[in-house]
Length: 237
Image 1 (cartoon, rainbow, N blue to C red):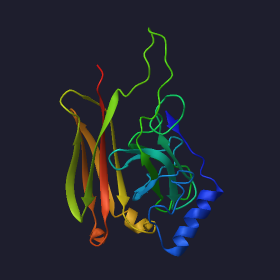
Image 2 (tube, rainbow, N blue to C red):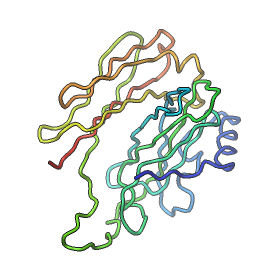
Image 3 (cartoon, rainbow, N blue to C red):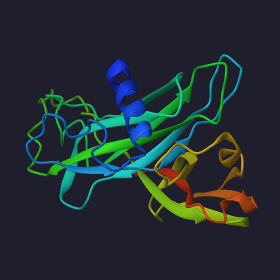
């Protein structure tokens, strides 16, 4: 299930204000708004793939809270208009932290515009102490409740000039059912289109492994760029 929070004028104003001030630290967005106790976590600028076809490619990025915390709020900053950002949520009632969310959030980004200039988004999570998260609505005995039949095995590695291979794999008792990878930049301002184009990669699947072959240009020498590889692994036969 996907929850797509509306990216409205308030978020765009926040993003513009942050860029104008030259800041981008956790808490600059609204991920902790309305939460009494909250640890703000800012992710890197995630590169959004582009295409002119009706079916647009998407990118997924995994952002985690500290141990013993769950996601209580989310937000994002955009480098340009036309980026649709949401996050994956779990089924359950009521819609609440610890039920709809867990320790980490998986953000989903798609570029819907026609004038791409190296589009990126920066995800934020507001983390609150885990306290059980309440219960789920009971169901009939002969009905299977939604659970967590799949797990994400995530590996995030720094990208440097040159070529390298990054692999994420399922555990021995799991089956690979999905594969994703994303490039991101840890910096205050959105990366330029030239910087976005300085890193590339190709993804393949081999058995229970997701393999991404990455290439970085010399422009990455003084920049902290990362590639995140995700293997979605089924735990139910």
